[in-house]
Image 1 (tube, rainbow, N blue to C red):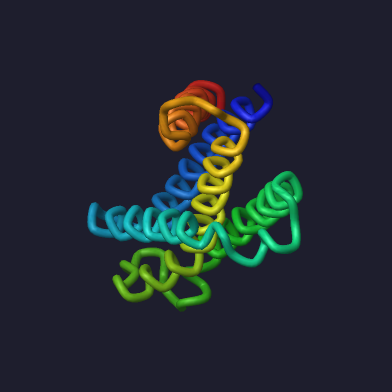
Image 2: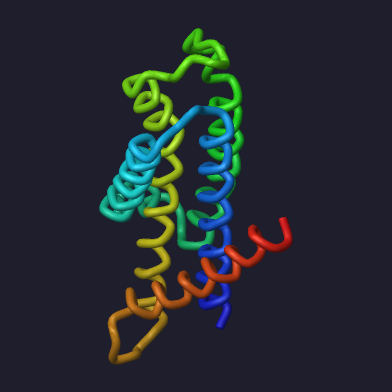
Length: 165
């Protein structure tokens, strides 16, 4: 039961982070659909690559709960740094407020901001699937259950961000 609540919490946190990042991106840049497409592509690439590297270095040094704590603390710093970069990116790249930012500068900013967070969240999602597999003896694949609870968390997070925040 605790693991299911943890997975739902992961869904809530991930949708809140995604919404905050997209709102910051939209409010600080004059963007169009192409820029949003690039942002989503980099986000999903980071998420997928983070899921691939799940069995990496942290597994050797930390247990599950320690890894999750470390990854969430790092996630807080990543989100803070991302918001700061979005706020000051026009100054960093010497762009006036009325000038459109080039696609290359946008890609650089988005890679710096979105890939680390996507890697972190993808790693956490894959980690939750592994732990659910160890603790569950259900006949369905654990990814289905984890994804279902994550979607429930996304739904709850969407309600929170839309109606409360």
